[in-house]
Amino acid sequence: MYVCMCYGVTDKAIKNAVKEHGVGNLRELNTVLTLGSECGRCVQMAQQIIDTTIIDDSLFKEVC
Ligand code: FES
Image (cartoon, rainbow, N blue to C red; front, side, top):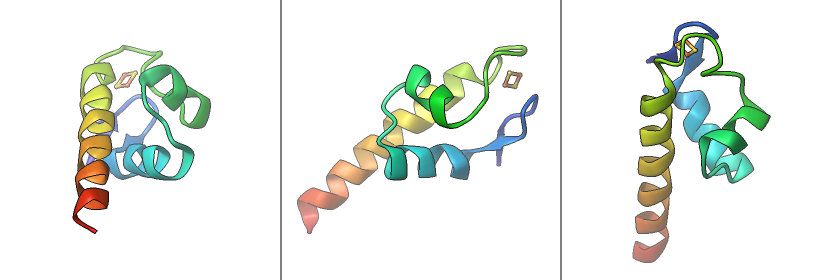
């Protein structure tokens, strides 16, 4: 699913940035991917994906 239509960034790309680069917020995400600086409509959803990916990852680690 595309999160940022202006730069063609998918939810998968954002999840990968969190998992592989330790991205924890939008500022850090922008060092790995380019999004949010055109119309800004994707910013809120991008932050939500970062948050849920971090939560999912930490739950996964606790179980294992
Ligand atoms: S949708 Fe991301 S900047 Fe426009």
